[in-house]
Length: 461
Image 1 (cartoon, helix red, strand yellow):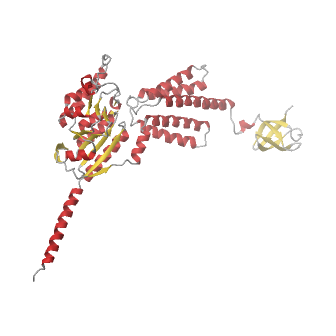
Image 2 (image 1 turned 135 degrees about the horizontal axis):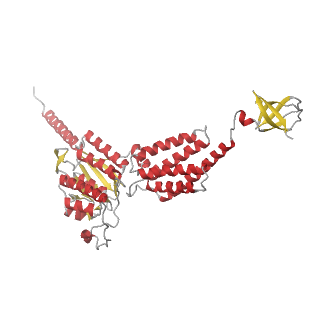
Image 3 (image 1 turned 60 degrees about the horizontal axis):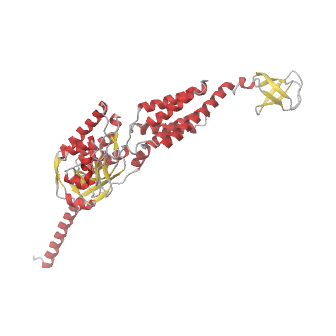
C-alpha cells in the first residue's frame, strides 16, 4: 500500500510543529522571580524574602532577583537573609535599582552574599559601619556624611571629617566582627575584600561605575531585562555546592507579591506601632481595673499586650528601657496611694519617659520611636494612672458600697405614712422598714440596722 505524498508532507509538518512546541515550552519554562525590597530591612522584609526564596527553590526556578533600595537594617534580619542566600539551591542576584537607589549598610552585606551583584548606573553602595552596641539586636545606619575621602573624586569634592574618638573595647568587638563577616562573604564570591573592610571601618561609599571597576559588583544594567540578557549563559559556582549555568535571555519574569503576613509584620514591627500597642494595652487594663465587669478594656488590653510582646521579641529591645518603663509605672501607682508630695510621681514620670526613649536599642533609620509619640502617649499614660489611681483610692476610703454595711447609716425617705411598718426609699431602692415611732410621707430617716430584708429606721431630728 502506497502512502500519498500529501500525507507525508502533513506528517512531517505535524512533527516539526510538535518539536517546536516542545522546544518553545522548554524555553518558556525558565522563570525568574523578582523580590522587591524597598526600605529598611527588618523582620517583615526578612520573612518576605526568605519565604519567596524557599518557594523558588521548591518550584526550581532559574534565578531570584532581589531588587534592592535600602538605607540599612537590623543585624538579626540581615543575617537570616544571608544564611538563606548561602544555603539556597537557586542563584540569587541582588540588583540595586532604580536609578537613585542605594545598597547602604545592611544592603552592602546582601550584595556581597549574592551570587550576582549588579547596579543601575546612578546608584551607590557602602556605609556599612554598625552603629549599635546591642549585640544581635543592633543594626546598620543609613549613610550620612561618612563618605571615604579616597573615593570623593566621584563626588566632586572632599568632605571634612572630625577626628574620630578612641573606640571602646565593645566598639572594636562589634566592628571587627562585622569586618570578618563581610570579608568572608567577599572571599566566598571572589569580590573586593579590602574595600569591604574599608566600608565597615570607615563607612566608605562607591558609585556604580567605581564599584564595577573595583570588583565590588559584576554588572551595571539600565533595567532588569538588560541584566537578564547580560548574565545569560553565565556559569555560577558554589550554588549550594554546585555549578549552575543561567538561561535568562528569554525567561519569564514574575514579580513576587507581598501578602497579608508581610503587611501584618510590617505594621506591628514598626517601633512606633509596637510602642503604641504596649501603652494602649497598659492603659486599657487600667481602665478595666477602674470599671470592672465591663470587659471591653480587659479584652483590648490583653490583645494589645500580646501583639506588643510578639512585636518586641522580633525587635532589638533594650531590657534597661523595658525595666525603666515598669519601674516608672510602679512609681506612678505608688504616688497615688502614698503621700510623698510628688516625689514618687516625678520619679515615675522621668523613669517612664526615659524607658520609652531607651526601649529600642538601635539607631537604624526606620526603627526608632518618634519623640512626639513618646511625649504624647507617655504624658497621657501618666495622667490616666493618676486619674484611675485617685478614683480607686477614693472608692477604697469610702468603704463598702454593697451589702449590709453599705445600707446601715444611709439616709432614706419614707414612701408612705405608717405607724410601725411601711416602706422607705434608700439609694433609689424601695425597702420594707419598721420604726418605733409613727412616720409621715417624705420624712427623712436613718437606717439603724437590718434584719433580713427589713430595715430599722429612725427619724432624723
